[in-house]
Amino acid sequence: MRPTAAICMFSVLAVAGAAPAAPVAEVVPYSGFLDRDGTPADGAVALRFRIYNDAALPAAPENDACNGGASGCVWAEVHEGVVVHNGAFTVRLGAAPGDARRPIAATLRGRTQLYLEVGVRNEADQRWVVLGRQSISPAPQARFSLQPDIEVGTLNVLGEA
Figure 1 (tube, rainbow, N blue to C red):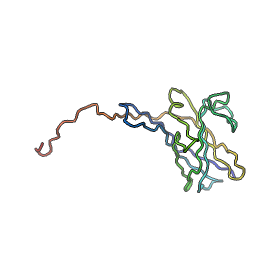
Figure 2 (figure 1 turned 45 degrees about the vertical axis):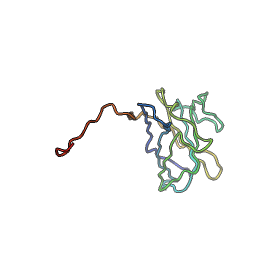
Figure 3 (figure 1 turned 180 degrees about the vertical axis):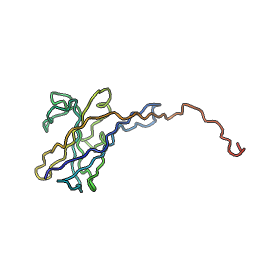
Figure 4 (figure 1 turned 120 degrees about the vertical axis):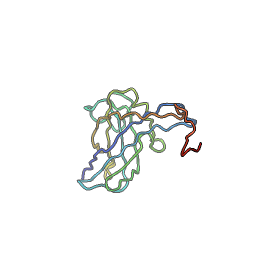
């Protein structure tokens, strides 16, 4: 029984503007679909996400630190206990709990082409099953400011100021 995944969404949000009073978490929402032999999966699973700078390189060894060495793996994060319902799951890359957290924004900035690999832990032998690698495509940037660029004056509604 080999799990498979269909990747539904990967988006990168860049924030620009005035510095906020509190730090803004830089995470990437990721949604996908996981099935087992054609049937949508249900339950909790462990998912591993790795970012590579080359689509053709083989998967990095289990103990690879993913710091840009010969494996081409430049980032990795494991999410334990991801809830999968009718095959659908959502995680926030760069926001894994505890020691598994790895900042993702710096990895994505300034790169021309990267590839996301998704793996699921096999329940029987605890080995990672690589589900594939996909190109990370930039999304249109969303820009906002905590301070408006224009001043809003008095609004006159029905002759009342």
